[in-house]
Length: 218
Image (cartoon, rainbow, N blue to C red):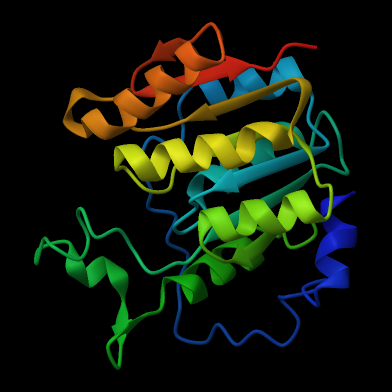
């Protein structure tokens, strides 16, 4: 099923309608959202559908849209996140905690993401799905949604990352690509999960500058 059709069926066909972004400015702060894997893998897959698991303020989604739309003007990017921040860094580090934009004790990063997408005029390309990664993966599977390219950049713990890989790999179309971030020794859980998954599925694993990718056999 197409992402747009699924979103319409669950009531998220136009999440930007009536959104009030007063008081916000564009803030596309992110991490490694300009890595050369983005244009390279988009060029390899020529994606009509992209799924991003872990999106934060949307910097990497915006970057992917810029590369995907010239190839396919109907490209769609589904951004899955809770927008509640990571416990490993943002909640534990008092110097970084302001990035959560707490309002009455609750993060408001989702509003920043929405404002960024609107400001970049990408509301017909980028769509949010505010769920946990595994719940969203199960929902997409139930609607038979697949993607040409899936980007994993949510949790950093070994079991959480492995869970994301396990739930999203079946959603990659044959010949498509799954890739991700934080393949650093500082995030050993990510390395363990990615290496384990690649080994168990006999998949060649490519890595570069903290990013990794695997191609699904056709």
